[in-house]
Image (cartoon, rainbow, N blue to C red):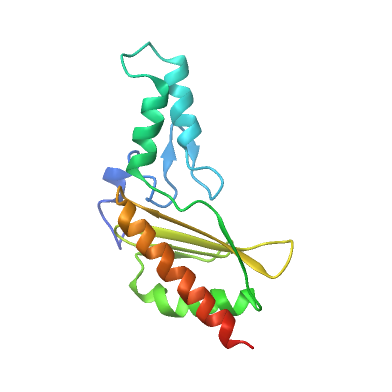
Length: 153
């Protein structure tokens, strides 16, 4: 996302893992690096606190609930990505197609990428502290994926 689309990104850059090119403890966020491990390591080496590490992890995960990686067998993965882009990209705050399709919205985001092993895609959906929204969007995207895959008979 460019700075002109959201001037407050710089304010939340160090706090918000949804912000594009976010840095968490000097570590750039990528699809495989949410910054969570770097965040946890800072507590391991830091001064002792009254909060235990497992509790910190649970609290952090609760801030950004995730569907985890959901693998979907599809007939034409490229067509499914194009279909999802046509449905969601115009409403997204940020669209990244550098590795599949990443869509960022105000309260949730998703990543869909192709696998190297066969005709399937991998879906991951996250929300900002709202488990119900994450589950709703996950179900919605799975239905859209199934809808497109089924129509290609």
